[in-house]
Image 1 (cartoon, one colour):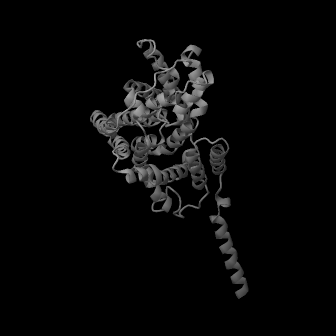
Image 2 (tube, rainbow, N blue to C red; image 1 turned 180 degrees about the vertical axis):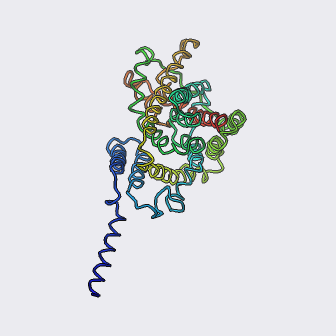
Image 3 (cartoon, rainbow, N blue to C red; image 1 turned 180 degrees about the horizontal axis):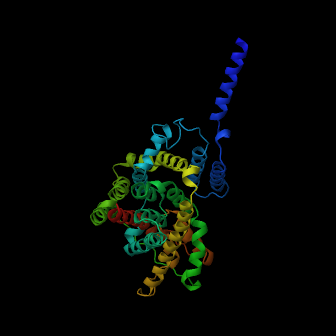
Length: 386
């Protein structure tokens, strides 16, 4: 009888154990999301598409979709779990400003300072954000949700996370994954649009070499730039403040250690945390909804509008510029905030038509302007939608 009791106890323990396994709790949605995570990792390794982003996000998607027995307190949405604590950086929005600090510390604004009119291209590309905002409203999304979706067009993952955490926290996983996905797809999406909207003659335009920028100008730029943008859009303070502060650390010449920390270990650590936790937030029961599909579709539209607006703006702007001062419209795509990938795309497409016409140094101007522009656009949306 005693042996029978022990056997029964062991059987009950085994049944309980099996109930806690992922095999017992798996759904087709979990399997689908794990496959998506594996796809992200494959694209990062095989295609070299933004591996620093797609590998953490891809593995995070796998972590977040391991089937769990309810009540284990280990999932990203379960209060007090380790993953939930790490996810607070996304939910509360303090990872994105730290990313912007690192971006500022690694960004050289010389191309923009030497040719300030390139700032207008970065501004024009933000039409993608407001265009998608209007389309999302027409599609039935609430104004706050539409604003959070529209920011995908800025091609800036941290900005998308920051804004969606304030305006549409329930959609943050889909918005963040969409934003980072389109950042990785910059070399795929933008070139066909650039070729479609430009003529061969326009693609061969040679731009004047940028003038040399003094150290004094570099030191003054983050201070003046911050004051101007922050007074115009105070709601963008967390992103703009950290961006320009990071740049001041770089250019001041007396805070080298702080700048190296911001653009090195700090941004690497935060990138890992933000990638993994954003991936974890894509649990099948929350992510696999029609809203997520609409967000990806609207995000693609936003990205296309932003790229097209930048290229078309340059074409229109050239009508008012004298011969010899014209801008190659191939750098119009770099007004989105995917630094430096969209600038590289400008350069690579240009080299297809003239192997000696290097556009990278020119494209970096609107590219870094796009970083500022996306933060300003986020501040505008946050100001009238929150």
